Image (cartoon, rainbow, N blue to C red; front, side, top):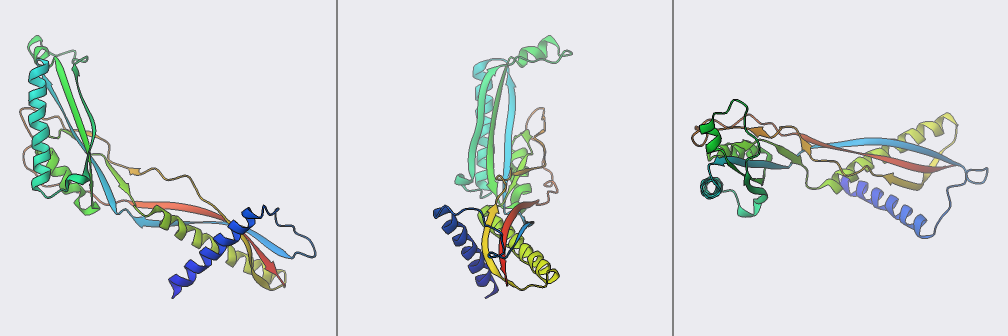
Length: 248
């Protein structure tokens, strides 16, 4: 019942704003015939992320284009096979980048023999969507299969509109509480809400904490090891409400 009442209040406030905009209403006029209290209030809403977008990928070198591509294909398919066997849905995996080109950078201390082995470089990367609790598992599986450039995770919340509505509802409730206190101080009675508008912030950028870790492996995939200890992040949004209340 409390949730329904809150939703009704938000919808009513939204209808007031829509009506005001449709009618091209002027700013609320304050005079002796229009006794009002105007309040601007802000509040936040926080929730645990319900989606983890794990970035995985690998980098491999070779002496020529054909060999580099062949070795890269083996690693690429090994990573995909490992994820598939672990039960990761195909639709949760999206290609992000892939490139095969001549290696333009060599370490100064690199020997001629090593330089000859690193004439070409192949990079490939994907994103894998998973539940937050499965992020470490997905990362571990990919790394063990040869994803030597992995680690970045984007933490997201899928119902951002609902979270924004929650922040706006909290801000409106705060505005009403402030208006009530002002009315008491002025020795008048708060009659009700006559206008409200929500100034929503820009869409938040997904939280990125872990940097893209270059786990360079020599001679094959990383040896088996327990998954990293990864903790779910929280997503936060805010809202600012301008509300005008009538007084008696």
